[in-house]
Length: 381
Image 1 (cartoon, rainbow, N blue to C red):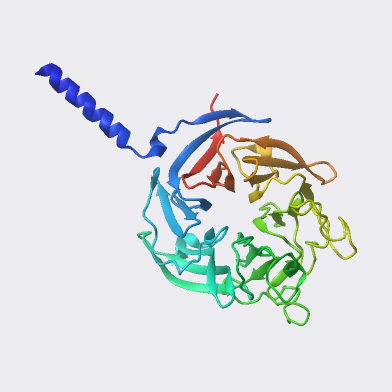
Image 2 (spheres, helix red, strand yellow):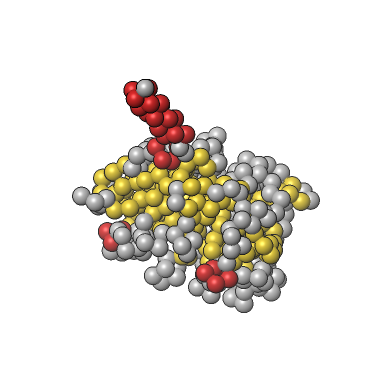
């Protein structure tokens, strides 16, 4: 009887262990990078194409899933979808995309998110503001601040990443929707960086605020598909990373009223191999700060200013889908951007977002139906 009891307990324990969520079975990986030894742990798995992540004040995570769910991850557990989202058209690259916390989130619980929605003519990128309930179960006071002015068919190139300026206004990248000429139409939001206030109004410093030469929300033009946008917290400089075609992914510094060239100038070619535009230069159009050829298919962008990795201070970190890596880039003594290292190549799959957490760790989302949230911290020797 005693032996049978032991066998039953052992079998029950094995059954319980097998039933634990998959993230509990993941091992932490220790990886040597060029400058520092890091450990990469799986915070959560089973996420459906997680697109963006932010850290809540208590250390939990808020994550978007592209098919249309917003979830809280706390203590390794993925919560049920937060209710209250608007109707989302999840098609191709579209769906529920970025999320950003208001600078006063600890007191006002306000957040912003981007999503693709349907309307007359097709679908397009929209920007919303909402309040997360104290119990984290629903969004209240959901308000659409912006919808791109021309909707169209197809599921390509929505952009949709948000960067919040020091004054609380929003900069958002919008892709050309796979229709390249729209990026040079100043009466079309596609292929633009737009700039709006937190209530959706037009900021006083917008270059086309009077609407005479361009839509008043447009900050800059000539962008193909900016899926990464961020401010350097040290000096407030705005940067974007955007997809090229076959080659020509770019890092840019979008300035008011300037034209970044797509599709007139580019360092890439069409997927057919044919030339695009007039070449790599044209008067009145800006050069990228850096470009990749071949393309890495960039996702999120961060400028590292955390305490955990002083070796990376001021470096650009770019998540890449195609080569499944984090590209680390530095500025040399002249200010030129140079790619120094490709980290985690192929180790974790397609990497969508990269964020610097308050403690200086990196947070990364992987683009898969069984996607993961990863945390990169300094390894203890």
